[in-house]
Amino acid sequence: MTQVIDLSYNTLNGSIPSEIGGAFALRELRLEGNRLTGHIPPQIKNCLSLTALVLSENNLTGPIPPTIAELTNLEIADFSHNNFSGNLPKELTDLSHLTVFNISNNNLEGELPAGGFFNTIPVTSVYGNPSLCGSVVNESCPAVHPKPIVLNPNSSTNSEDDSLPLHSRHKKLVLSVSALIAIGAAAFIFLGVVFITLLNLHVRNSSRQSASPLNFQAMMSSVVLQ
Image 1: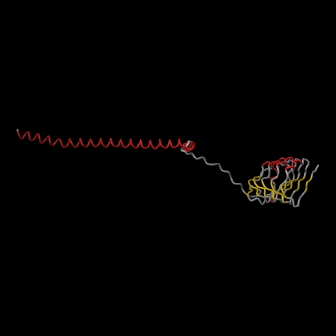
Image 2 (image 1 turned 180 degrees about the vertical axis):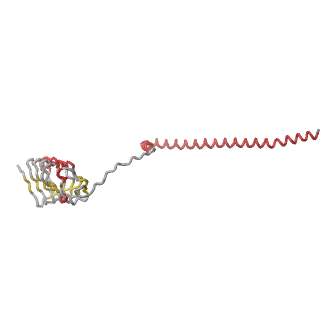
Image 3 (image 1 turned 45 degrees about the vertical axis):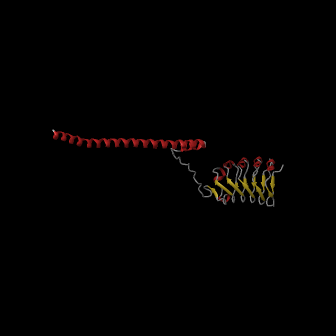
């Protein structure tokens, strides 16, 4: 059975066929220096005997699949000079036999895995990925701050209102306007009653003050007549 496939530095194009997963005895797959495109097929995880996976200097895209971590015998992995993107799988730290892992000159991002080989990975193996962060690239990763809790007493009311159907919200609005009109009318009536009461008191006081002199004059007239 085939143990080594070395097609490096040819003019191969197209993608890596999924049938590669059937090469159970394959120990080395070297495809660097070609024009290959597409993603790393997930079926690569079936090549459990792989010790060297060299895909550098192609036009491969997509993420580096976490299934690579299932290749427990892997010693050399070179993905440099491609267009790989996304975050590096944390599971890669489980590759205990890894001695070379080159991801330079790609579009990878996020934090480098911590542990295992990655604790001593050289800078030359990761440079050329502007969005990578971690101590190796001397770039701190942005902190993830929890969203502040905003206590809004109207939030529950607003959410309840938003969940109501349109006709229910319209009815609620009409009732609110009607209540305001009723309150305004009651206030107007109350002010009217107070005004009329004060006016009656004023009239009574005026009548008393004008009635006293008339009675006094009548008394004086009756005294003179007598």
